[in-house]
Image (cartoon, rainbow, N blue to C red; front, side, top):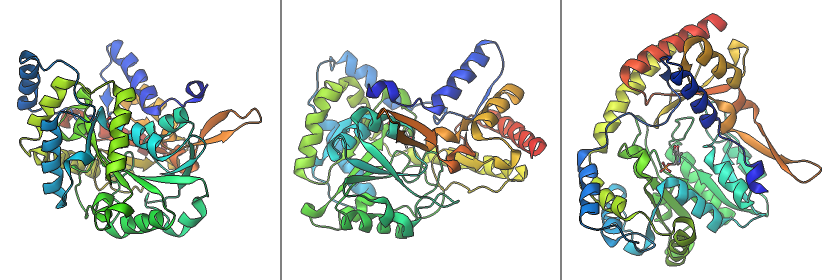
Length: 400
Ligand SMILES: Cc1ncc(COP(=O)(O)O)c(C=O)c1O
């Protein structure tokens, strides 16, 4: 029943339309996917084949192989200057499964979670499947939390709040003061914080503060952050489906480890050996710098479109209000693809709000802010990015 009402992601909708056009032989400028075209570092590919050759093809411990957990522990502790014990590191099948585990651990069916008003669509899909009710915390026109409104958005059934900075799709980084205010709010209301840090390696400007760093300023029994990381974007390895979680205390770590059993059946063993090699070199800055160039190019070209938009601080996307064209995001994306062969994602899918009909069934409609935006990815190869954004700008200028 829950699966039959779960909303479809607008990213997938555009992906399918763009694929159909490509199959007809049309050159499509793909500014819709959050998947940088970089080649995955060779050391990772080599480690994967080596692991298979060496016979690492059997079930692995539920929390992950010790070599990978140790590599993650060392990497995180160096990055964040904290002291995470080994048992708090739980490997996952991408950030996707980590999010799913965290949501199900923190919020029982029927209780409520707080998402930002503009959010990554998997969150609502996972909540719907788990029977979790969703409220949102409001964002202003620059996609920053409206802190003065937070108290009105919490209920006696709220159990967790999700923070995703830098954000997919808005690209904004919450400034340290805002992250602290969100943390204090969660503390006051005894909420878990699920911190989705999938883009934490891709910050182009501003000061990055992770909720995890704040959490470790508190004694263990008061900690509340489950931090989620992904190898997907950081190592150009989206297809390998690897990620991990950092748990705030022993009990949470134990529960998350247990949940790996029904949710993964055990993580893919050779891929874990490959990720040990991913972490053996800290070369994420190479990809970050290549993306910085694309971020800059896209920003300069988009400035010509005549619309006002918030420049992202990190991640892979510009999120632009295109309402002056007289179209909503869905119509805009469909027409842009048909007329200019440029694929962008309608904002509607990033702001779905659920409501129950008289029959008690859930249905979803986009909030007003999301519906008037589109997401433009700058993860595409430079030449495609340049031509695609030029076409997009020309389209906006003609329609505004
Ligand atoms: C904000 C955010 N969180 C999580 C994920 C999932 O990442 P993974 O590929 O590690 O499952 C994505 C993927 O696009 C994302 O954008």
